[in-house]
Image 1: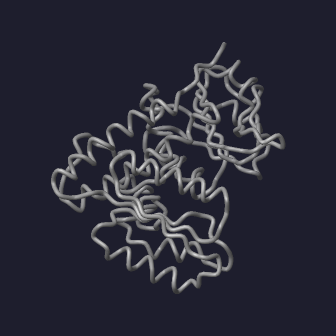
Image 2 (image 1 turned 45 degrees about the vertical axis):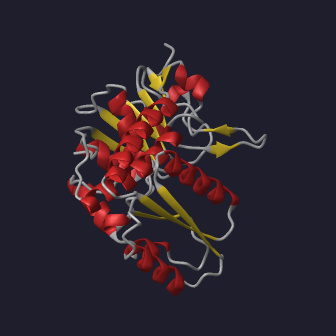
Amino acid sequence: MNARPIDGKAIAADIAGENAFRAARLRDAGTVPGLAVIIVGDDPASRIYVRNKALACEKAGLNSWVHALPANTPQERLVGFIRQLNGDPTVHGILVQLPLPRPLDSRAVIEAIDPAKDVDGFHYHNVGALVVGEPAFYPCTPWGVMKMLEHEGIAVEGMHAVVVGRSTIVGKPMALMLVNAGATVTVCHSKTRDLAAITRQGDILVAAVGRARMIRGDMVKPGAVVIDVGINRLPDGKLCGDVDYASVARVASRITPVPGGVGPMTIAMLVANTVHGAEKAAGIAADRETRIA
């Protein structure tokens, strides 16, 4: 068996086109969707991520503002600035780039964001909506994975999905989205005993642990759909995922590459969330349902 790659770049480009269409409709109605990104400190990787997000917004016809604050910014000043953005009608999405430098309290900062502008989907209000399966802003990476599965025509309902990783950004919301879509879900993590025995049960296997090439071909059920969320930099500077692509591709039916798989989807869904926030603020309904029921 030779797995078919899932082209995240192509799927993200389709979503970007839809985002641009919806943004143009909003502009015609007098509203320009706007995303405010806050970055604290000078982490090089964070700056690259922020730049890519800003470029994606601009390509889709959104306003994008990057607010760079020094690493020693006090908690009170950061929270106060977020509250100013909450009250700005031109801002429809607020994103605080994580991780924040110490001693800033990331949870308190996220909770300062208006849930209606929390386009990362990390506020407790939006997390709670995901738990009960109601429409909300959902975390961009797992939502992007769900859109990939949908695009590939993979009927999640009734499948056994195994998620390796339990982070609040990817693993846990990924599991919840799969449960809401009708899958039977097992979540594995660093304390899981005999991990390979469990991963081999997955019709869908999502790897999101941040360990280079951890998932090998002998850990995958023949014919499984393998989604690699990880992105790791090797000593030679090359990027790889949490999945050993070469060995897993010989066993799986479909697989996401790194780079070019899940990564582009994350930014596409961030822009989609921002556009949706602008549509709600303007009282304009989206042409197509973009929430996961």
